[in-house]
Length: 90
Image (cartoon, rainbow, N blue to C red; front, side):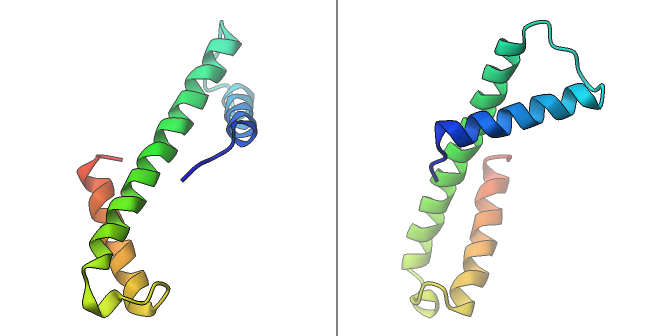
């Protein structure tokens, strides 16, 4: 899954603002904090994309889940996605 730089920046600013407003963290270097948040967001979506790809490859070998979007396919997709997330500790 790909997320644009603008979207990543928007989400990072929202997170930073929420942390500051709720007095959960102080940032001596706001730019550094934003970059760290952006890096975390990018890493998450990178892993999510890898997991999605792995799950779709796995599903391709299942006869009962050949039709993408079918009930069986969706159930197996969710099951395999959770398994892959657990393997990668996300």
